[in-house]
Length: 206
Image 1 (tube, one colour):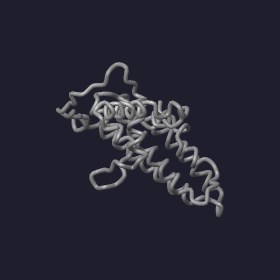
Image 2 (cartoon, one colour; image 1 turned 120 degrees about the horizontal axis):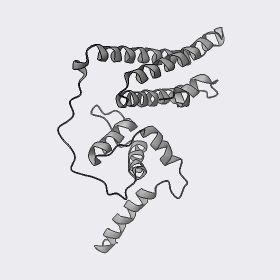
Image 3 (cartoon, one colour; image 1 turned 180 degrees about the horizontal axis):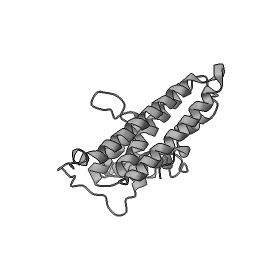
Image 4 (cartoon, rainbow, N blue to C red; image 1 turned 180 degrees about the vertical axis):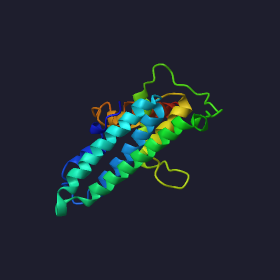
């Protein structure tokens, strides 16, 4: 089951802010929270599990909000705003699931007819693909159709379609990439760099 207690957003909302401007951090954590929750809800086929997960999220966030309100004049308005955003989102998702259960024929997914002809070799690990996904995301070189910065999950999904793979929890794999030891952190990207350098040298460009 998806665990809200392990999310960055819940941890930020549950502790006292020590930064002078915590909004950027909470805003980014909220975006990650929504992306991961949507991925879970889209992947989980058991409606009972989906509803229970959303109910648990509602209870935990409502508890955080109630505690913050109890502080009176010392309450953190930013935390209350994001608690309300989460509660509103959870409520909308619950309504959507109930609609899906009531009118299932209107929620039948039509899979895209196009399928990429590309596949990865057996010796290619998902963490290696994730290096490229993380690199593109952190470099901010990928944008959406309206020019805004592309979310990490969108870049990851593009690679999934391109190579016919499933990365699973993309945010978790992103953390796995950046938390590796220094000599392993960009291991696959180093292989790509080396391959290009060797080809360049072979053709006399170096």
